[in-house]
Length: 154
Image (tube, rainbow, N blue to C red; front, side):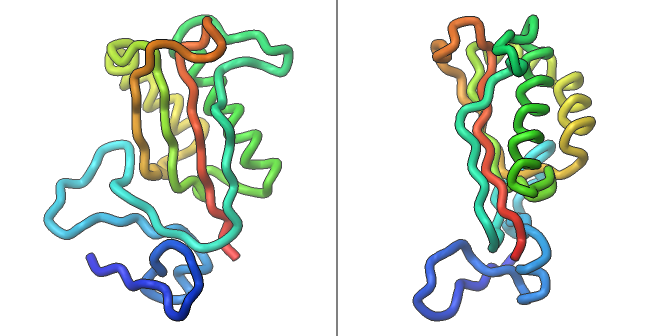
């Protein structure tokens, strides 16, 4: 896959193949010959208004954490969808998710159910993602925290 660079002195991510595509949606970056990732993208390129969340955890509006890892993931992703909506963004505008989990085995054990939850909230759009195991999160009972970046097309 060839990615063009922006013209002139403006800063930003690489442009999409055509201006029409660049203004309409994010481009998935899949280098030629690389195996197709499952459930994430190797990279994304987009132009537009950037929306960034803080670290989002699985609590409700009363700051009560959902019970257990899977329930916290469900609430966390729902919370991210609500934050995106505040900016006029939708799940397909996501270009990056960074997951922080306190128990990577719990994540791996629940992959099938987590995939179902992800698709129910965000659909089949898979941005670039990273998963990091951490010793603990600021909220001691939190099992997962996710940061999201979205780009709303111009």
